[in-house]
Amino acid sequence: MDNRPIGVFDSGLGGLSILKTLTRAFPYEDFIYVADLKNCPYGVKTKAQIAEYVSDISDYLVKRDVKAIVIACNTATANSQHLHLSIPVIGMIQATAKEAMQYRNRGSSLVLATDATVQSHLYRKALNAYQIEAIEVACPTFVMLVEEGKMETSESYRIVSEHLKPYQELAIDSVILGCTHFGFLKQEIHNCLPDAVLVGGGVEVSRQLRHELEHQDAFASDLRHGVVSLVTTGDRDEFKEKIQLMNMPYDEIRAI
Ligand code: DGL
Image 1 (cartoon, rainbow, N blue to C red):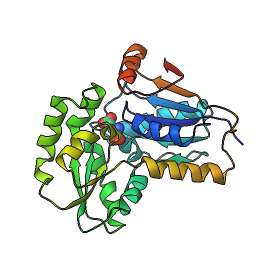
Image 2: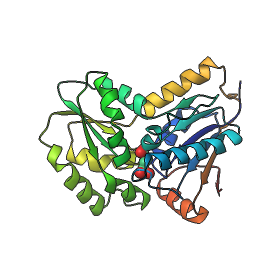
Image 3: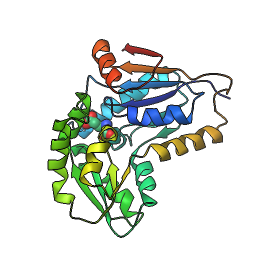
């Protein structure tokens, strides 16, 4: 048994789409979620900058004595190869590609991601390993729609549909939400590509986390109720306001 918290991080609010799945799957566990709002968005930064953010947040979480880290950010996952921690670290890209495998049919996977993730071509590699053809599309404008709380607005429907129009006639089996922010734009994406399955990776990330905790006999006691702490590197009040729009239950919120 291990009652230490699990660390989860993203550049901003996108990782909350993964945190929601994790808190439902692990109700007894404590979670510390870091939104690196000071440096958001990651997708337009250099590899060296993103790698530095990943190191800084991981150091912070290790100091908070977490027992595992979930990198709930594809862009950070693509730039995390330098991390060598003694605790399990679970990233998004392999997990999401694996989740897409069950929806493989005759078409391709449309990977929607940030510029940095698309440039890494790690999704193409991971999907090709499952014999899935990948079409990688950078969607730089989508992240700020979520950060600015503009989900399910006429603006978000317009921007998403303009961006995805070229892919509407193609045979697409699955759309990879290759940026965790896009988990909050599912309605808009589904509206453009109604026949494709949307794959966000949260289910497979949960499965991998369960596997790690089982393996290390590190589940928290089932006599407790997990505490969710939200932390930002940005402004606390701004963060709190944004969180309210995302319908995310939490126990404490603070800035570092
Ligand atoms: N949510 C992040 C991802 O999954 C990136 C958003 C950004 O900061 O550009 O890639």
